[in-house]
Length: 421
Ligand code: RAT
Ligand code: ZN
Image 1 (cartoon, rainbow, N blue to C red):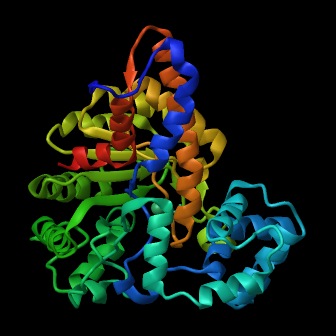
Image 2 (image 1 turned 60 degrees about the horizontal axis):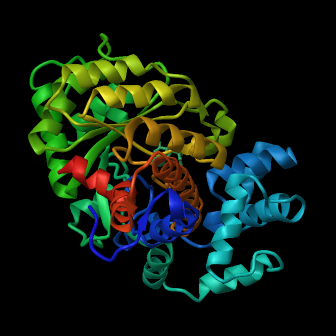
């Protein structure tokens, strides 16, 4: 839509487009639809500060690999010792140009901390002088974040009591009900539910289906969950004769539909490829997009949000999204969250899906990480968008600033909220 007096771009002034797109994308606030951040009400579950930033599991893998220290030596250190070891190994002894390392540099820079010459002690002194509430405000403002979606696990014994106590959660932090144990460790999940008073048995006898649905409904309501989510291995198939398929078909899909929320599937993680690395030891595998197709085709009144971990799955997943309006694809997940792959995926998605995609989420585990994750991603999204607009005006289109703003709004949050509504 063109408003009077507003700037319009055509082939004649296409040279000015890139600057405008960069400005508009930077001015647009973000809804970060998948993170591992917690609202301050969750106390120590909200990770923040330089020692947490440095001991991010992406960096643990890189530091242990670079130094070749024994795993037990790393895990035997205290958190401040681990952070100091990672700083020394990846930032002092080497040049920190891997994406996870550059992320730390961006974070320090954005906080005004002079990463180039600063010492770890100076960074620590800065964080020690901040309160967590002020730091949340400051980081949200600097990252231009409107809100984030947490990952909320009712099987977690630290998190569950906070919800049960009815804690007042900062409204900038939305909830997502994460249910990995139900789908990836059914026998164990069934015994936990049964111990908590749900009439559930691993053989699906009696009231099992109704009781699992009651459990899900109670947690969706308690958390005001925006969606349910799970991470799945590369061999994920649907339908098949596993408990996982049964729980999806009989419990998750009808409950999601009843509450009008999507089911998010994150597919392709091989958990514990190297168990000695603990949280840093997961790998990637190519998965089947056919299972996603079947889910979407058989359940047209359910909404699905899908991200896949293997680069090799991205094209077929885009094509599947073209076929199914009840499928929203999102983010450049984990090992894909690197400039080369973000750019490739974003370009492919824009060309196949226009603005009907959630191009990125941060997956931040530590508050300050949103500073780098969104800085780096915004730059790539703006670059690819500017390329697409340049091609478009060269083909004869007239592009208004309003249209650019509308696209930026959709890409950085609007498409997610529209899909939920
Ligand atoms: O990206 C990550 O930090 C991974 O460890 C996982 O948390 C993954 O994003 C997930 O949600 O399972
Ligand atoms: Zn995650």
